[in-house]
Image (tube, rainbow, N blue to C red):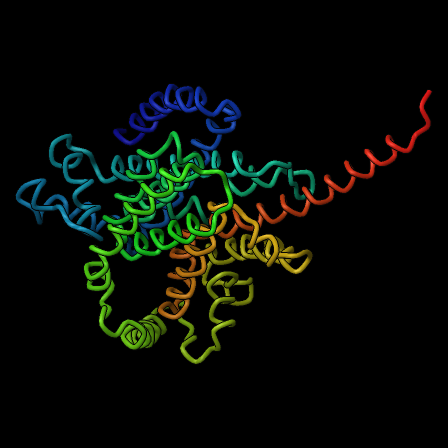
Length: 397
């Protein structure tokens, strides 16, 4: 009952928050965002039902926050302890049940979708559709993304943080605080993702052609650069990597993780795969025939959609697009590719691949949508120039 009341209460809080966001982004469809809330809650319910008969990290987070820390401050740390730290006051001060914590963290994941939706809408000029369905709306309702961001755990929190960071980068001049908060949360949840995000931002700012004031570029560049420099050793230690011999230690860790994960259910040993096949596995598998269970079968439809989107790369000058693309696209490309290279070598269990890749697939889809926009812009400009030529050649009346 507490969870049901919390669902209604958070919906009541969400409505004025959406109106506040709409005041700064007038194109935000409040009706669609309300539907998105209930859609996300549906997946929270599905996740909750599913874990009743299977192991889940969410149970461990809840129990650990109840029993292992003497105070809120004692729970503080990066990685898993940070989720305990976030959950601790709600469990120990407010008496939230496990079900209520699931709802609360699902709500955090929901706001990640709101932020990503705004990023897509602000940076995609033209409307793109599949069988008459708006692609941005379709992307924001992809089921696998909702399933892994609708529970007590890292998935919902880091998805919120990534969305917030991208939201801040989308309009850097007025959203520096959103960027800062997003990066701070990313560091606390997954320090190695923070490191990759920092590299992506630096790459985007260095190569960007957008008219961002130099002092803003310098401010963000300096802030991210200093953070990456001072936190480098901590990030490497968190990821069990040797900062003095990074490539060798990563190869060793990837080989070890690949063997360990292949022993689990739905395991596939990809340690001997060539790099392109490893990446294909990470991005597009399972595909029906190797789907691990009903969830994997549903995800196969989503992977088929990813393949359809990716096919567009071969129809147009993708290299030219990337060279001319804005900072946000370049940042997305660095984060997506760097994370893919890292995880594709370390994961060999399809179930874990399905879960982990949900963290970065919106970066991938944003790049592909921006490329579709680029191609459509070329077509529109050609038509406009042709019309101008016809008008200039028309005889005067």
